[in-house]
Length: 230
Ligand code: C5P
Image 1 (tube, rainbow, N blue to C red):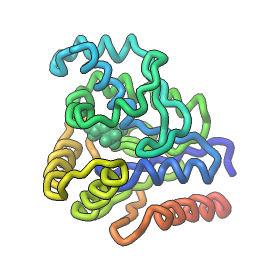
Image 2 (cartoon, rainbow, N blue to C red; image 1 turned 45 degrees about the vertical axis):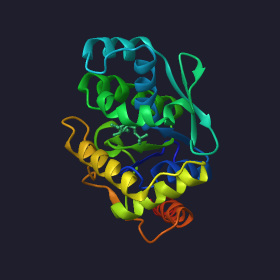
Image 3 (tube, helix red, strand yellow; image 1 turned 90 degrees about the vertical axis):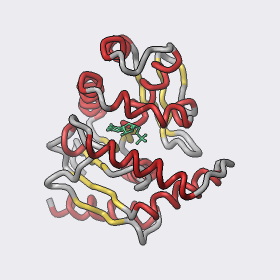
Image 4 (spheres, protein in one colour; image 1 turned 60 degrees about the horizontal axis):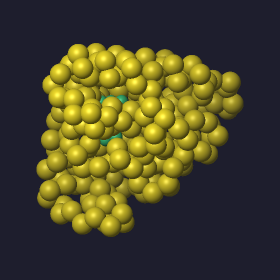
């Protein structure tokens, strides 16, 4: 395989990106980067410090002065660990409060510029990675070797989320999950900077009828065949 291999996976909430990206990275023996976790980490820190999420300059200072370190594999609901100023906040960033507020951080162009720069730096440092988010193939790594966009029907994504929460001991109704997801989809696509969209040269994988293993297998075979032929 090439010395440097950048694979981006974008897609809406609940499309299975995190699990797929983590498993694909493991199979390829390269780094996995969960960029949503970086936005979540800043959201968690702002809430902890009681910084108003509309105060753009305080948030920018927080982003500039803090050290967000995505760090290695985790288990359970979080495929990767993350540290903020040295503290492991892997489970904290999955709280409903952080999930509900993270769009406020993700909507701010100055914060995005800082995190995009950090993600590109991680790419340069590790050389090869599978990175996952909303803007990875469009903005952060426009020259990536492979760009995938995972999609699934909104009902399927909501059902997956219900089952995932149930596995983790939380019972939430399908209608509630579906309505929250619809709001997130709308916000993700309407964002002025770094919105969710299919990269022009991206491969769309429709996963409604597939399980995680089949999706990972599809992406893995795609990469391996192209690499062999290229
Ligand atoms: O994917 P996840 O739910 O962890 O993302 C957390 C938040 O960060 C969401 O609001 C999502 O829209 C945002 N995000 C983003 N750009 C990325 C990854 C996530 O705006 N590259």
